[in-house]
Image (cartoon, rainbow, N blue to C red; front, side, top):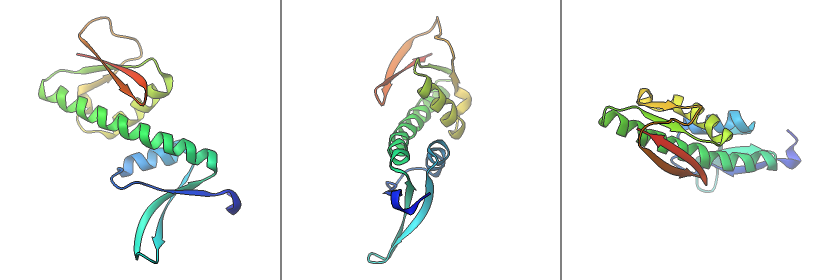
Length: 136
């Protein structure tokens, strides 16, 4: 990368390492720890070209929200001893669901569907303005 076009953004506190590295893999940005000499503290940053950083911002939000939703669905599935079938029509979101589902506990209570299930009660959620259907 050329030094002239490099943009850096600090990563907000509380973002899990698994999400940070999924974003690094997906967007092709660099991850590093930067030191602030004035405050005498270190903080993580993502660096890359402006287009990559814009994608990274979007994916940070998307990966984080998907992980939170899947974690809660898996927890409820375990509590009520039922497998939740998750379907979305959005191809990008389906890909992200498949990636993030590998990083959560209780993933055996979640099933990602390629086709819309024809039976079961359905609940609709919106994740970053994209619809996700959950069948139980």
